[in-house]
Structures are given as structure tokens and as C-alpha cells.
Amino acid sequence: MRSYAAVFTLAAALVCPVAALADGFYIAPHLQNITTDGATIIWETTDAGPGVVAYGADDKYGQQAKSDEVVKIHRVRITGLKPATSYHYQVKAGADHLESVFKTAPTGPVPVTFIVVGDSRRWDTRWEETKMAAHTLQWNPDFYLIMGDLVLNGHKYELWPEHFKRYSEINHKYMMVTARGNHEGSATTDKENDWFAKYHELQGEGEPFATFDWGNTHFMLVSIDSSREIPQWLDKHMPTVHSKYTVLSQHLPIFCAGYFGPTDSRKVTGAPGIERKPTDPEMGIGPDAIAKSFDKHHITMDIAGHTHIYERAFRIRDGKRDDAAGTAYVVNGGDINGNYPEWWTAVADDRTTEGKPTYTVVQCKEDEMELRTFCWSTVENKIVEIDHLIIWKNESTPKSVLTGLAKQTGDELVASIDRLGAMVYGPAAKALLPYLRNDDAKVRQAAADALRAIGNSSTANDLLPYLTDKDPAVRRSIARALEIMAPAAMGNTIAKQALDASQDDKVRISLIGALQFHTPAKLTYQTAAAILNSDAPAAVRQRASYAIGRVATKAELNDLLKWVDAEKDEYVLIRLGWTLNSLTGTSVLIDGKLSTFPKSEPGKRQEFIDQWTGKKAADAA
Image 1 (tube, rainbow, N blue to C red):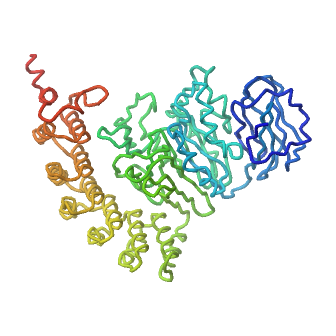
Image 2 (image 1 turned 90 degrees about the horizontal axis):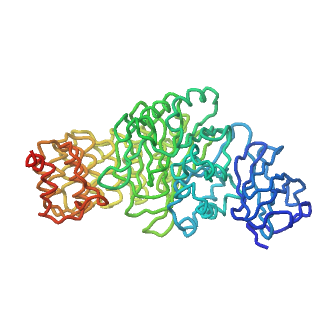
Image 3 (image 1 turned 90 degrees about the vertical axis):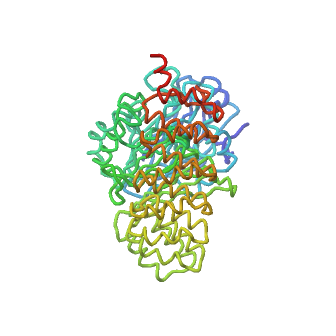
């Protein structure tokens, strides 16, 4: 007999004979739609038959829920349960059986912990190899939240077993609630092959707007088919919500720096009609309309996937950073490969040291919501934390942490400094500066990281000396802090450090960003051009070419054409082509899948140059 759980005792109270059940699991039982008084168990058998679940307060069971319908995909609802109570259950199918335990949802505004994962279709076997499931379980989660894209094509039946097998350590014990992504396929077409709908049961009214309360938090999951309807739906729905925290999950990001690459793939700024046009079938409206609806209804956190990166924005309200009242925007696309940070980016992944898979744990506590994100370190070969955010409800919380610093040393001090950074508590910035001179290297690094996380402009002048700190990690955090908030008056000093060939590459990359975001375009262009004309490391030249694409004007067309003709680095070459397309209004093909441009040899690109200069059109005329 094959078993799918750690417990193997058969219940004598299970009266349905084995011979009456379908023979074997094709999709093993998994939990859906857990509420305060019930739970749904879904599984698929290799042959059609009735579906029976034995359950009870212990492993003697004693009760049954069943469906007499002779089918392969079984959906059995257990009802009449008590809130916040553990129940044992057993499912049998011929030679296979599963025994496990689940816990019903609580009543009242109690704390809740949930795990976020996204776009796991791209993980291959990395989730299993890295033992990420076991790592998530240390948080004792209530359930798991997924932003869709579970398989490559949700309308292909044969792809689904891999998904359910990937999560087989947890999905029989914890509910995995999912917002439909684009790869699940539409719920409105080819319904016969809509396997996402067949294998899932969402809370409330179900798709496209599933809602439920768990403890002190209200959850909303929007299927991709209905993204365009979010503002109108929130207007109707939010007056009925009275939870301390509100979390909305949908597949498409509202703010997203996009993939690492020269063409700004999937960059989304939240602004109307720029990266995503009003007629785009994936959204149907500009993402600004959704962001404004989040502002209107004070949504605590928006969680998205789709773009296979990890990025967290500063809390945003009215199109600008608002650390006290904004919505926290998280993109957890399950992978690592983010583009350069944008003005909204609080944390971006690092493709040079981090790898898939990723997950985020969110703890909705009485006075704060705490978020931590983990991924696989490709350098340390272990799971590492890459983000920490605390959304506090009362300022007395960060104030008390700040007050306690003076009496602390060692690891306790490091932990408190980390908390202040995670709280993005601006008033702590000045108080943290002295710790950059601490004798303890861990304390210095914690202070630099916290100042980076806070990104408060009041400390900008005080941070400049630490760009030459002996510790490269400190220098990198300080440079990133300046990328977030450097004043324009600091431009010349930052440019000098960005041009310094002896400086750490990652420091230089962040400083180029600081120039791009905060200083006059002319200074940014001059600095980036000098780097592009040098033998700087490839990563630094690539960042310089990206900045040039953001600040160049038609006055620099001749420079751009000369660089194109001589450039050897493919990233830089494509970025220059992207810039020329933008400035000239032409559409020269620069994509390697459609054009020979990326692989063309220096000095042999005249056919492309002619298109940007209009020579071909003039000759034809």
C-alpha cells in the first residue's frame, strides 16, 4: 500500500470498502477553502469512483464526508467543524491512502502568519533540492498564498501532477490559496480544460474575486481575467471590510522595475499609458488607476508575481513614497533577475549572489505586520534572508526600539538596529550614524544596512565619508542609500566616486543610479559617457549605458551612433539601440530573436545606423 503522509494507521471507523473506491491517486489529496467551520479536500484518482473522507478530532476519525458521484476528480467538503481546531483526516483510493491533519481558521482578530510564493512553474526541482518547504514550516504558517503561474499552460492536463507533487510536503496539511495567473489560462474560454478551476476552490464567492478573513487580516485574490475591474470592485467591497490589515493579491505588478535587460522588459511605473497601455489585454487599464484605488481604500499590502524577480517598493501613496500611510507593493515572482532599482524600489534582488526559489513570510501581529523574504544564496549555498519590513501601527513601537539602543551591545544591538531599518523609521537615521564608527564590524554593517533601508535624506552629507570605508559591504549599503535619496547638490562628489576605477563595482553601479535619479541630466550623461569610453568592468559600463538611455537627448545622437558602431558588449549595444529608437522615433529591430543586430560585429553596423539617421529613407525617396 502506498502512503502519502507520515502516519500510516488505518481507521477502523472508515466503513467504505477499498474495492468501492477508485484505484490510486493521480493527484494526491490537497486542502482548499479552509474556513472557521469547514474545509474542502480535492484529489484525482486514476479511475472513476465515489469520494470519501474520514475525519475526526483524532486518528480514530469516527466521521465521514463523501460524494457519491462517480468521477475521477473528487471535491469533498467537510462541514460543521469548530474554529481554530485541528482535525485528522484520511483519504483512500485503492492501494493508495493519505492521512494528515489540518486546522480550521480562527474567529476574531487574532494574529495570522502566511507564506507567499509565486510563479513556481519555473523552479524545476530547486524547491525540493534546497529544502525550501522545511524552511517555510519554521514559521508555523496558517496557510500559503500563491500569485499564480503554477504550470506552463494550465489548460494542459498532463502538466498539473508536477505542481502538486512539488508541494506535496505541505498541501495536505496547509491550504494553498491561489490567484489565477496568465499561465493558468482564462476562466472564460475552453472551460472544459480549465484545470485550475477543477483542482481549486477559492473562498467567498470564488473567482474572479475571492475573499476571506483570517484572524486580523482580510485577504482578496483577483484572477487575471478581472484585473481591470479592481477599482470598481474595491469601491463595492471595501465598505464591508473592518480588519486591521488588508492584503490584495493579483498576478500582475503595479510597480515593477522589470527584468534585468537592456530593453526595460516588464517595467511598470504605476503611471498611465506608459509601459502598459489602456488597451493592453493583460490589464485593460493603466496601473495608476489600481494604485489610486489602493490609496482610496488604504490597502496595507499588494502582492504580485508575473515578473520573475523579487522587488519590494517603499510604501507608496499618491504616486510618491509615504512610509507612514502608503501601500506596500511586493513582487515575488519566485526567481531572481531584477532590473536596476527605480525611485520606488526599497529592495531589489541581486542576480550575482542570489538564486531561485524565493518565498516571503508575512506575520500580521497585533501592533505590526512583519515581512521577511528568503532565497537561495548561490555564493553561500544556503537559504538566506534578503528583505525585512515592519509596518507598525503605532509610533511608540519604533520609538521604544530606538530608546533602547543606548543600553545594548553585541547581537542584541545588531537585532535592534535591524528592526529600526525594517521599520523604515526616519527619525532613527541620525541616531544610527555613530554606529558606523563602532568597533564591532557586525554593528557597523547593521547600521549601514539600516540607513540604506531607511533612505532618509537628512543623513546624506554624513554618509559621504563612508563611501571610502574599509569594509566593501558598508560602502555598498551607503552607496545604495545615496541612490535612494542623494540631494542634487551632492552630484559632483558622487560623480567623482562613480568614476573612480579603484572603487567597488557595486558601489559605482549604485552611484550611477544616484546620478540618474537625483542630479541634472547633463552631469549624469557626462559621467556615464566617460565610463562608457573607459575600460571599466562590464557591469559598470552596462549600468552607465542604462543611465544614458534615461537622460540622453537628440543633441547626443552622434555620440550614440559612434558608440553603436564600436561597441563589443551585447547588453550595452542593445541599450544604445533602445535609446536611439526612443530618440529618433524609429523602430529598428534590436531583439536578438528577430534581428542580427546584437551579434553584429563592431564597424559593420552601417545598415542599422542608416535606419536611425534616415539615410535609407532619403535614398529611397
